[in-house]
Image 1 (spheres, protein in one colour):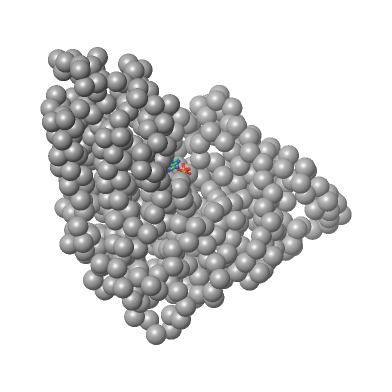
Image 2 (image 1 turned 60 degrees about the horizontal axis):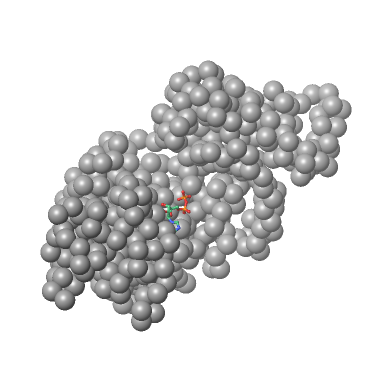
Length: 500
Ligand code: ADP
């Protein structure tokens, strides 16, 4: 019918608007490199390029028993990690919900005392022997001064709120997010807050490192992946997106505040690339990107993340679908015999469909659409019916939905390639004669893990990038790195302990 033909034409137009050509990708890389350099030079650049004071990555031979804790949202995770020294490890972990009243406690002490208490419970439950041995030694010691205690656990503290990092185990809270609000803690060193409460309980634990989750991903990948040179980049494509990479100290032009080990000549930089190109010099900007941005609490900020990460892709798709639904000339999700005066009442969509709610579409629906290659798109049509409350979607409906969702996912993957390529080029590893073996990159997050062919689409774009090409792309190895906030944090604690 003319209506379905119009839908096909309209779908093509929308898909075309999400096109991100090889030429665009190359322009993106050049600008990404420029903004990286700017961030290394001064504070207040679009990409923050935060020095982490981590000056080495592991190679898989590290050994020992370490602890890690993770405070980032609704749960507090406590774990211990036995590193076996052969790229494997054993992780023991518990998780406890943070009581709501502590998220808005009067004093920082209340929250951090609770966290320290969880560390104590974990130690007693899982490391009772170690714990008692330590206590006994403590009691019999006449003079603790100058005593180097192998029984003290080194702990990596993953703290996923904005902090001003001042050293490997020192950082002040800039502001709370995600429902936390304890003004008393703002401006204070969160490692010291935790250490103070741990000491009150006389626990054999030293907070050795303050950890960002991307740095944890880089460390976890470096430990676990085969090869002796370690990963160059850890990247997250989950709710948000960010990356941390190994930079030469000589390239870090802005002043470094804290103490650090200069012997490796390198330092891990947390790029905060979610805010790459907030100025929109090279990022694509469809009408739906504009709409999405205006509806967020932080318009004009995190503009790269808003085109790449799981939190936003479902919403971009929803906004394009709404526009098609409002268009009387196309038949998306409509009965053939309805009239089109009121777009909501004439569609085949239930009033309470998540399509009508901001943030109503989860990015996982893009994965369902991309994964369904059955001729009748029956899996996707079932999903549309069951979860989006669209009655009896036609094959044409599902085809249009799949094409647009695919275009949004593809653009996200090609934008991801921009960041990855720029960092590969920045490290110079492709032209480094000492770089034998692959150039290793660790990635984590639902999008890269579950979106079908996400990595293949990244590679496709990498091959088209000047300075990488077919040959370079073959040398880049992108692998999943799990447990950044567990084993990764433990590894940072290990690296930090070596510098003590
Ligand atoms: P986080 O980044 O918060 O640690 P995840 O890596 O699991 O957690 O990412 C969660 C994000 O991934 C959410 O925005 C969600 O919409 C998206 N997501 C969840 N499942 C999938 C999937 N199967 N395909 C694509 N995206 C998904």
